[in-house]
Image (cartoon, rainbow, N blue to C red):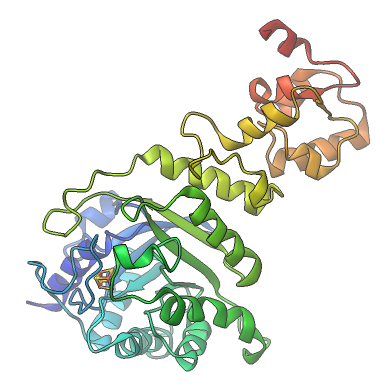
Length: 377
Ligand code: SF4
Protein backbone atom coordinates (compact mmCIF):
# COMPACT_ATOMS: atom_id res chain seq x y z
CA UNK A 1 0.00 0.00 0.00
CA UNK A 2 1.49 3.40 -0.89
CA UNK A 3 1.91 6.14 1.69
CA UNK A 4 -1.01 8.25 0.51
CA UNK A 5 -3.36 5.29 0.68
CA UNK A 6 -2.08 4.49 4.17
CA UNK A 7 -2.69 8.07 5.29
CA UNK A 8 -6.17 7.86 3.84
CA UNK A 9 -6.96 4.68 5.80
CA UNK A 10 -5.43 5.99 9.04
CA UNK A 11 -7.29 9.26 8.76
CA UNK A 12 -10.60 7.41 8.44
CA UNK A 13 -9.61 5.58 11.62
CA UNK A 14 -8.81 8.84 13.41
CA UNK A 15 -12.35 10.04 12.70
CA UNK A 16 -13.43 7.92 15.71
CA UNK A 17 -11.99 10.69 17.83
CA UNK A 18 -14.36 13.23 19.35
CA UNK A 19 -13.60 16.30 17.28
CA UNK A 20 -16.33 15.83 14.72
CA UNK A 21 -16.51 14.10 11.36
CA UNK A 22 -14.31 15.21 8.47
CA UNK A 23 -15.92 17.92 6.38
CA UNK A 24 -14.29 18.62 3.06
CA UNK A 25 -14.26 21.67 0.85
CA UNK A 26 -14.67 21.19 -2.89
CA UNK A 27 -10.94 21.79 -3.32
CA UNK A 28 -10.12 19.16 -0.73
CA UNK A 29 -12.55 16.65 -2.29
CA UNK A 30 -10.91 17.22 -5.65
CA UNK A 31 -7.45 16.57 -4.29
CA UNK A 32 -6.13 13.37 -5.78
CA UNK A 33 -5.15 11.79 -2.51
CA UNK A 34 -5.70 11.91 1.24
CA UNK A 35 -9.32 12.95 0.89
CA UNK A 36 -10.23 11.51 4.28
CA UNK A 37 -7.41 13.30 6.05
CA UNK A 38 -9.03 16.69 6.51
CA UNK A 39 -11.10 17.56 9.55
CA UNK A 40 -11.97 20.90 11.06
CA UNK A 41 -11.15 21.94 14.60
CA UNK A 42 -11.84 25.13 16.48
CA UNK A 43 -8.62 27.05 17.01
CA UNK A 44 -8.80 29.31 20.10
CA UNK A 45 -7.67 32.40 18.18
CA UNK A 46 -8.42 31.62 14.53
CA UNK A 47 -11.78 29.84 14.75
CA UNK A 48 -12.46 26.89 12.45
CA UNK A 49 -9.36 25.60 10.66
CA UNK A 50 -8.79 22.54 8.41
CA UNK A 51 -6.34 20.07 9.94
CA UNK A 52 -4.87 16.77 8.83
CA UNK A 53 -6.26 14.34 11.41
CA UNK A 54 -4.57 10.99 11.36
CA UNK A 55 -3.02 8.16 13.35
CA UNK A 56 0.54 6.87 13.41
CA UNK A 57 -0.85 3.34 13.50
CA UNK A 58 -4.21 1.65 13.87
CA UNK A 59 -2.56 -1.44 15.40
CA UNK A 60 -3.09 -1.68 19.16
CA UNK A 61 -2.31 -4.07 21.99
CA UNK A 62 -4.87 -2.59 24.42
CA UNK A 63 -8.48 -3.76 24.63
CA UNK A 64 -10.70 -0.72 25.19
CA UNK A 65 -14.16 -2.23 24.78
CA UNK A 66 -15.68 0.65 22.78
CA UNK A 67 -12.82 0.88 20.28
CA UNK A 68 -12.64 -0.77 16.84
CA UNK A 69 -8.82 -0.92 17.00
CA UNK A 70 -8.62 -3.04 20.17
CA UNK A 71 -6.30 -6.03 20.10
CA UNK A 72 -7.81 -9.01 18.30
CA UNK A 73 -10.52 -6.99 16.51
CA UNK A 74 -11.06 -7.71 12.86
CA UNK A 75 -9.81 -4.36 11.62
CA UNK A 76 -7.40 -3.47 8.86
CA UNK A 77 -4.16 -2.39 10.55
CA UNK A 78 -2.01 0.25 8.94
CA UNK A 79 1.12 1.99 10.23
CA UNK A 80 3.27 4.85 9.01
CA UNK A 81 6.88 5.58 9.81
CA UNK A 82 7.52 9.03 11.28
CA UNK A 83 9.20 10.28 8.08
CA UNK A 84 6.34 8.97 5.92
CA UNK A 85 3.68 10.68 7.99
CA UNK A 86 5.63 13.92 8.30
CA UNK A 87 6.26 14.02 4.56
CA UNK A 88 2.57 13.38 3.77
CA UNK A 89 1.60 16.22 6.09
CA UNK A 90 4.18 18.51 4.51
CA UNK A 91 2.70 17.84 1.06
CA UNK A 92 -0.83 18.60 2.23
CA UNK A 93 0.33 21.70 4.04
CA UNK A 94 2.20 23.02 0.98
CA UNK A 95 -0.90 22.44 -1.16
CA UNK A 96 -2.77 24.51 1.43
CA UNK A 97 -5.27 21.69 1.96
CA UNK A 98 -4.66 21.79 5.71
CA UNK A 99 -3.47 24.31 8.24
CA UNK A 100 -2.75 22.05 11.18
CA UNK A 101 -2.00 18.52 12.34
CA UNK A 102 -4.00 16.36 14.77
CA UNK A 103 -1.96 13.26 15.54
CA UNK A 104 -2.98 10.19 17.53
CA UNK A 105 -1.99 6.52 17.61
CA UNK A 106 -2.77 2.97 18.68
CA UNK A 107 -0.31 1.40 21.11
CA UNK A 108 2.17 -1.29 20.13
CA UNK A 109 5.15 -2.14 22.33
CA UNK A 110 3.90 0.03 25.21
CA UNK A 111 2.82 3.65 25.60
CA UNK A 112 6.39 4.94 25.78
CA UNK A 113 7.32 3.45 22.41
CA UNK A 114 4.11 4.70 20.80
CA UNK A 115 4.73 8.19 22.23
CA UNK A 116 8.29 8.16 20.88
CA UNK A 117 6.95 7.61 17.37
CA UNK A 118 4.48 10.48 17.71
CA UNK A 119 7.27 12.73 18.96
CA UNK A 120 9.60 11.67 16.16
CA UNK A 121 6.94 12.53 13.57
CA UNK A 122 6.23 15.88 15.16
CA UNK A 123 9.93 16.74 15.40
CA UNK A 124 10.40 16.04 11.68
CA UNK A 125 7.38 18.23 10.89
CA UNK A 126 8.72 21.07 13.02
CA UNK A 127 12.46 20.78 12.30
CA UNK A 128 12.93 19.27 8.83
CA UNK A 129 9.81 20.78 7.24
CA UNK A 130 9.92 23.93 9.37
CA UNK A 131 6.18 23.88 9.99
CA UNK A 132 5.24 26.60 12.49
CA UNK A 133 1.46 26.13 12.57
CA UNK A 134 -1.03 24.34 14.79
CA UNK A 135 -0.27 20.83 16.10
CA UNK A 136 -2.52 18.82 18.43
CA UNK A 137 -0.72 15.79 19.85
CA UNK A 138 -2.24 12.93 21.82
CA UNK A 139 -0.25 11.83 24.86
CA UNK A 140 -0.11 8.06 25.12
CA UNK A 141 -0.91 6.31 28.45
CA UNK A 142 2.28 5.72 30.51
CA UNK A 143 4.21 8.48 28.73
CA UNK A 144 7.28 9.53 30.68
CA UNK A 145 7.85 13.06 32.01
CA UNK A 146 10.69 13.67 29.52
CA UNK A 147 8.32 12.77 26.66
CA UNK A 148 5.64 15.12 27.91
CA UNK A 149 8.22 17.87 28.17
CA UNK A 150 9.28 17.22 24.55
CA UNK A 151 5.65 17.23 23.49
CA UNK A 152 5.05 20.51 25.30
CA UNK A 153 7.82 22.14 23.27
CA UNK A 154 6.40 20.85 19.98
CA UNK A 155 2.61 21.08 20.19
CA UNK A 156 0.00 23.80 20.60
CA UNK A 157 -2.41 21.40 22.25
CA UNK A 158 -1.86 18.16 24.16
CA UNK A 159 -4.65 15.76 25.00
CA UNK A 160 -4.78 12.79 27.32
CA UNK A 161 -8.01 10.85 27.09
CA UNK A 162 -9.24 9.72 30.51
CA UNK A 163 -12.19 7.94 28.87
CA UNK A 164 -13.73 6.96 32.25
CA UNK A 165 -15.07 9.30 34.92
CA UNK A 166 -12.71 7.90 37.56
CA UNK A 167 -10.62 4.89 38.55
CA UNK A 168 -13.75 2.89 39.40
CA UNK A 169 -15.38 3.41 36.01
CA UNK A 170 -12.39 3.12 33.69
CA UNK A 171 -11.89 -0.68 34.04
CA UNK A 172 -15.36 -1.29 32.54
CA UNK A 173 -14.33 0.67 29.46
CA UNK A 174 -10.63 -0.02 29.15
CA UNK A 175 -9.41 -2.92 31.34
CA UNK A 176 -5.76 -2.41 30.40
CA UNK A 177 -5.62 1.30 31.18
CA UNK A 178 -4.76 2.53 34.66
CA UNK A 179 -6.47 5.79 35.61
CA UNK A 180 -4.24 6.64 38.57
CA UNK A 181 -0.87 5.35 37.39
CA UNK A 182 -0.77 6.09 33.67
CA UNK A 183 -3.47 8.65 32.77
CA UNK A 184 -3.57 11.22 35.56
CA UNK A 185 0.21 11.80 35.96
CA UNK A 186 0.73 13.11 32.40
CA UNK A 187 -2.29 15.40 32.86
CA UNK A 188 -0.82 16.91 36.00
CA UNK A 189 2.75 17.05 34.71
CA UNK A 190 2.47 20.25 32.69
CA UNK A 191 0.81 22.21 35.45
CA UNK A 192 3.35 21.13 38.03
CA UNK A 193 6.42 21.47 35.81
CA UNK A 194 5.67 24.48 33.70
CA UNK A 195 8.76 26.17 35.12
CA UNK A 196 10.93 23.65 33.25
CA UNK A 197 9.88 25.21 29.96
CA UNK A 198 11.89 28.20 28.80
CA UNK A 199 10.02 31.54 28.96
CA UNK A 200 9.81 31.71 25.17
CA UNK A 201 8.09 28.29 24.90
CA UNK A 202 4.34 28.77 24.65
CA UNK A 203 2.59 26.43 27.08
CA UNK A 204 0.28 24.12 25.10
CA UNK A 205 -3.37 23.94 26.08
CA UNK A 206 -4.54 20.70 27.65
CA UNK A 207 -7.67 18.70 26.89
CA UNK A 208 -9.21 15.35 27.73
CA UNK A 209 -12.09 13.21 26.54
CA UNK A 210 -14.67 10.91 28.14
CA UNK A 211 -16.77 8.11 26.68
CA UNK A 212 -20.17 8.83 28.21
CA UNK A 213 -22.60 6.06 29.09
CA UNK A 214 -21.44 2.45 28.91
CA UNK A 215 -19.58 2.40 32.24
CA UNK A 216 -22.74 3.49 34.08
CA UNK A 217 -21.10 6.63 35.43
CA UNK A 218 -23.30 9.52 36.58
CA UNK A 219 -22.99 13.09 35.41
CA UNK A 220 -21.81 14.21 38.84
CA UNK A 221 -18.90 11.74 38.64
CA UNK A 222 -17.77 13.13 35.29
CA UNK A 223 -18.15 16.74 36.36
CA UNK A 224 -16.46 16.13 39.73
CA UNK A 225 -13.36 14.84 37.94
CA UNK A 226 -13.41 17.60 35.35
CA UNK A 227 -13.97 20.31 37.94
CA UNK A 228 -10.94 19.08 39.89
CA UNK A 229 -8.80 19.01 36.75
CA UNK A 230 -9.82 22.52 35.72
CA UNK A 231 -8.72 23.76 39.13
CA UNK A 232 -5.75 21.52 39.93
CA UNK A 233 -4.23 20.44 36.64
CA UNK A 234 -4.72 23.44 34.35
CA UNK A 235 -7.08 21.45 32.10
CA UNK A 236 -8.31 23.74 29.32
CA UNK A 237 -11.16 21.71 27.94
CA UNK A 238 -13.02 18.41 28.36
CA UNK A 239 -14.83 16.61 25.54
CA UNK A 240 -17.84 14.45 26.34
CA UNK A 241 -18.46 11.82 23.70
CA UNK A 242 -21.90 10.19 23.86
CA UNK A 243 -21.25 6.48 23.39
CA UNK A 244 -22.19 4.97 20.05
CA UNK A 245 -21.83 1.20 19.71
CA UNK A 246 -19.48 -0.09 17.01
CA UNK A 247 -20.08 -3.48 15.44
CA UNK A 248 -17.47 -6.10 16.33
CA UNK A 249 -16.58 -4.55 19.70
CA UNK A 250 -17.56 -6.02 23.11
CA UNK A 251 -19.92 -3.06 23.53
CA UNK A 252 -21.73 -3.57 20.22
CA UNK A 253 -25.03 -4.42 21.96
CA UNK A 254 -24.97 -1.60 24.51
CA UNK A 255 -27.48 1.12 23.57
CA UNK A 256 -26.17 4.47 22.37
CA UNK A 257 -26.10 7.30 24.89
CA UNK A 258 -28.60 10.07 24.03
CA UNK A 259 -26.89 13.08 22.46
CA UNK A 260 -28.99 15.24 24.76
CA UNK A 261 -27.00 13.92 27.74
CA UNK A 262 -23.78 15.01 26.03
CA UNK A 263 -25.35 18.44 25.43
CA UNK A 264 -26.36 18.87 29.08
CA UNK A 265 -22.86 17.89 30.20
CA UNK A 266 -21.37 20.57 27.94
CA UNK A 267 -23.83 23.14 29.31
CA UNK A 268 -22.89 22.25 32.90
CA UNK A 269 -19.21 22.26 32.00
CA UNK A 270 -19.54 25.82 30.65
CA UNK A 271 -21.21 26.89 33.89
CA UNK A 272 -18.12 25.67 35.75
CA UNK A 273 -15.60 27.18 33.33
CA UNK A 274 -17.11 30.48 32.25
CA UNK A 275 -20.02 31.34 34.53
CA UNK A 276 -18.52 31.05 38.01
CA UNK A 277 -20.69 28.16 39.16
CA UNK A 278 -19.46 25.71 41.77
CA UNK A 279 -19.98 22.01 41.37
CA UNK A 280 -22.45 21.88 44.28
CA UNK A 281 -24.64 24.50 42.57
CA UNK A 282 -25.30 22.28 39.55
CA UNK A 283 -28.83 20.83 39.65
CA UNK A 284 -28.03 17.12 39.89
CA UNK A 285 -31.01 14.84 40.50
CA UNK A 286 -31.05 12.27 43.29
CA UNK A 287 -29.59 9.69 40.86
CA UNK A 288 -26.53 11.89 40.22
CA UNK A 289 -27.49 12.90 36.68
CA UNK A 290 -28.53 16.27 35.30
CA UNK A 291 -32.16 16.47 34.16
CA UNK A 292 -32.30 15.93 30.41
CA UNK A 293 -35.38 18.09 29.96
CA UNK A 294 -33.99 21.52 30.88
CA UNK A 295 -30.83 23.59 30.62
CA UNK A 296 -29.04 23.41 34.03
CA UNK A 297 -28.65 27.21 34.18
CA UNK A 298 -32.39 27.66 33.72
CA UNK A 299 -33.12 25.17 36.51
CA UNK A 300 -30.77 27.06 38.84
CA UNK A 301 -32.41 30.38 37.93
CA UNK A 302 -35.93 29.06 38.51
CA UNK A 303 -34.93 28.04 42.03
CA UNK A 304 -32.90 31.10 42.96
CA UNK A 305 -33.97 34.08 40.85
CA UNK A 306 -37.72 33.76 40.35
CA UNK A 307 -38.44 35.45 43.69
CA UNK A 308 -35.26 37.52 43.72
CA UNK A 309 -34.71 38.86 40.19
CA UNK A 310 -31.39 40.48 39.29
CA UNK A 311 -31.41 44.29 38.87
CA UNK A 312 -29.38 44.68 35.70
CA UNK A 313 -28.42 48.29 36.47
CA UNK A 314 -26.62 47.33 39.67
CA UNK A 315 -25.65 43.66 39.33
CA UNK A 316 -22.02 42.60 39.43
CA UNK A 317 -20.59 40.69 36.50
CA UNK A 318 -20.89 37.40 38.39
CA UNK A 319 -24.55 38.15 39.18
CA UNK A 320 -25.24 38.98 35.53
CA UNK A 321 -23.73 35.66 34.49
CA UNK A 322 -26.30 33.83 36.62
CA UNK A 323 -29.17 35.11 34.45
CA UNK A 324 -30.30 32.75 31.64
CA UNK A 325 -29.78 34.36 28.26
CA UNK A 326 -26.80 36.42 29.45
CA UNK A 327 -23.34 35.09 28.57
CA UNK A 328 -19.87 36.52 29.19
CA UNK A 329 -19.93 38.84 26.13
CA UNK A 330 -23.40 40.16 26.93
CA UNK A 331 -22.44 40.70 30.58
CA UNK A 332 -19.51 42.86 29.40
CA UNK A 333 -21.80 44.73 26.99
CA UNK A 334 -24.30 45.43 29.80
CA UNK A 335 -21.57 46.76 32.10
CA UNK A 336 -20.28 49.02 29.32
CA UNK A 337 -23.79 50.24 28.47
CA UNK A 338 -24.44 51.14 32.12
CA UNK A 339 -21.56 53.63 31.99
CA UNK A 340 -23.55 55.62 29.45
CA UNK A 341 -27.02 55.41 30.98
CA UNK A 342 -29.57 53.26 32.74
CA UNK A 343 -31.06 50.16 31.18
CA UNK A 344 -34.81 50.61 31.23
CA UNK A 345 -36.04 48.84 28.13
CA UNK A 346 -36.00 45.14 27.17
CA UNK A 347 -35.32 46.22 23.57
CA UNK A 348 -32.07 47.81 24.71
CA UNK A 349 -31.12 44.48 26.26
CA UNK A 350 -31.88 42.76 22.97
CA UNK A 351 -29.48 45.11 21.19
CA UNK A 352 -26.80 44.02 23.66
CA UNK A 353 -27.35 40.44 22.37
CA UNK A 354 -29.12 39.09 25.47
CA UNK A 355 -31.66 36.32 24.85
CA UNK A 356 -34.45 38.39 26.33
CA UNK A 357 -37.10 35.68 26.31
CA UNK A 358 -34.87 33.57 28.60
CA UNK A 359 -33.68 36.47 30.75
CA UNK A 360 -36.96 38.35 31.27
CA UNK A 361 -38.45 36.24 34.12
CA UNK A 362 -35.31 36.73 36.21
CA UNK A 363 -34.42 40.43 35.86
CA UNK A 364 -35.41 43.91 36.90
CA UNK A 365 -34.79 46.99 34.78
CA UNK A 366 -34.63 50.06 36.98
CA UNK A 367 -36.69 48.30 39.64
CA UNK A 368 -39.35 47.08 37.23
CA UNK A 369 -39.98 43.63 35.87
CA UNK A 370 -39.76 43.96 32.10
CA UNK A 371 -43.11 44.46 30.38
CA UNK A 372 -42.10 41.73 27.95
CA UNK A 373 -41.99 39.25 30.79
CA UNK A 374 -45.29 40.45 32.27
CA UNK A 375 -46.99 39.83 28.99
CA UNK A 376 -45.75 36.22 29.14
CA UNK A 377 -47.21 35.56 32.59
S1 SF4 B 1 -5.53 2.36 23.40
FE1 SF4 B 1 -7.68 1.76 23.48
S2 SF4 B 1 -8.76 3.51 22.55
FE2 SF4 B 1 -6.59 3.70 21.96
S3 SF4 B 1 -6.44 2.66 19.98
FE3 SF4 B 1 -5.93 1.14 21.57
S4 SF4 B 1 -7.85 0.07 22.00
FE4 SF4 B 1 -8.35 1.95 20.92
